[in-house]
Length: 311
Ligand code: FDA
Image (cartoon, rainbow, N blue to C red):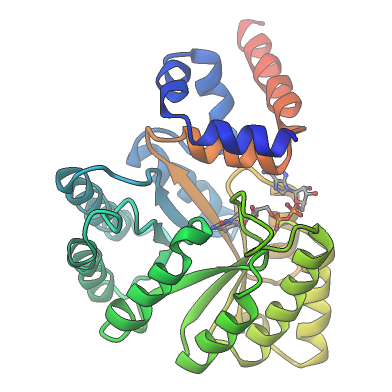
């Protein structure tokens, strides 16, 4: 019930206009968002790198409504890659195709993302295409498989969501293509016709897909905070003699920082997804939907930090 409420709120731009002006809400967002500017995001990556953690930077934003906005988002990613190159931080980028105009015109989207990929290729970097709701799954995989992956195979990868019934077959296709996959559970509200309604099935599907990707995939990203799945991944990797450099764990900025650092201490690779930018509202609502207890948790932090500044 709370999950659907937060996911509903994530799709209400008028509420965001109101929320963004509120200082408390901005402080609230800081737990999961590295800041509103690229400088703040690079500083957050530096701090992660100092702990042996790599990053994927995400300029927040989705579903642009005109070509100028889509091109501006593409330019912002070019600027971001330049900053990564100049600062020397260990980070790649993640982007959403609707932010690059996929809903407006697919040729426009390919043109914009193509420019980002040219730059990524020049600097031997990597661009992850985030996966959005199931309405976009096939279009994202088609654009990737037919137009973006062939010329930039070493520099672009996809995300697959274990909550979707189709994902096991998509994992097999990605393995056959040698495409790099980030595996996550899926953050969107989906109908039972396309997604498993029961969390048990989402988790079981995650483990099946994780095992296929670890054994036969190309450097998969195991993106989860679920300790049981993480332990199962480690057990499976050890059993099959899959070394720590053949995959990486991935987590979200601000989530399970203790576990992120522990996995690095244990010798596993960890990449943290670092979102930043002014469009943080839908992202924050999805994080609250995953764990409504975060509302109390972040409020506690905000109050504690406010009092410690005063004292
Ligand atoms: P699950 O939700 O079962 O949580 C397991 C445990 O993790 C919880 O019990 C809690 O301890 C902790 N936890 C999880 N979420 C938390 C939160 N928000 N705050 C605090 N603790 C939390 N989704 C998508 O649809 N498209 C995408 O492209 C991506 N990209 C992506 C990248 C990366 C690096 C990650 C880690 C995740 C994504 N996601 C995503 C989000 C993903 O689909 C999923 O919604 C979240 O990761 C939460 O699922 P878990 O696998 O962590 O399990």
